[in-house]
Length: 300
Image 1 (cartoon, rainbow, N blue to C red):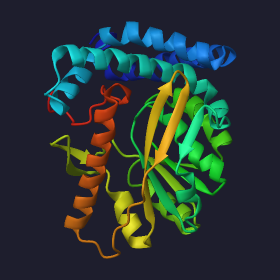
Image 2 (tube, rainbow, N blue to C red):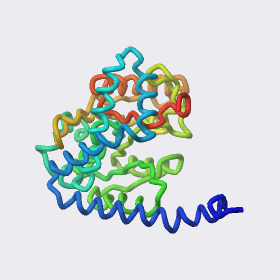
Image 3 (cartoon, rainbow, N blue to C red):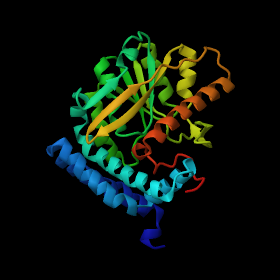
Image 4 (tube, rainbow, N blue to C red):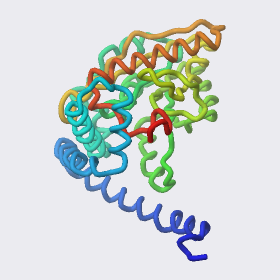
């Protein structure tokens, strides 16, 4: 058997050559972008994203997803949305090394409705979507100075994942691995009157099939069950890129569910939240993460 067809040799190359190389390149890119002023870094990577993104395999998936979700759009309009989306995603890369500065700038990140969460003495859950630059959502946790936790999905590359998770230091939050293991950490944080932040618009293996743009998609529901059990509020948070590296977050009215909610009631609330996200995405489709395999492998 040739080396390139040997699974063990392939795994060796991935672990000891590919992953370390990727991590080194990522580190150098982050350091370089951190030195460059945020507005320039955001503009440069936004431009690069708009030039490179359409030629990647992700673009085809994004096209399929957009057509599936919003078939009423003309081909020209879909092209405009996807072109602007790559600008947005590219900007996110340039802004990532400046996340700490963004969080500390009330001018760059405006939060509308922060008092709603501040007045909530008990623990609560913040739910958002992959809109604009979703990395600014933890700004809410930082400004409230409350015990907090973030549920995340790790990168496949453990070395790159280590670099990215260094942000835990300046967020002053506990990080919980996405999936069933996060439930214990979430409960502990909320029972201590803390706040949990979740992005719930991605496919979750353990999720429940709930319509999203009218098409069933695996959707997280654990946070709804926790909210019912502990009788706490769920705050939907909309993230908007207003211009360049400037953002506004809108904390919408809290949602509650009764303690002994049935499976049907939990499903109904999950559907309601999905529909809320849909309304946000329809307003600014270019700011959502269309390349994600939200509907599994229905089309891609």
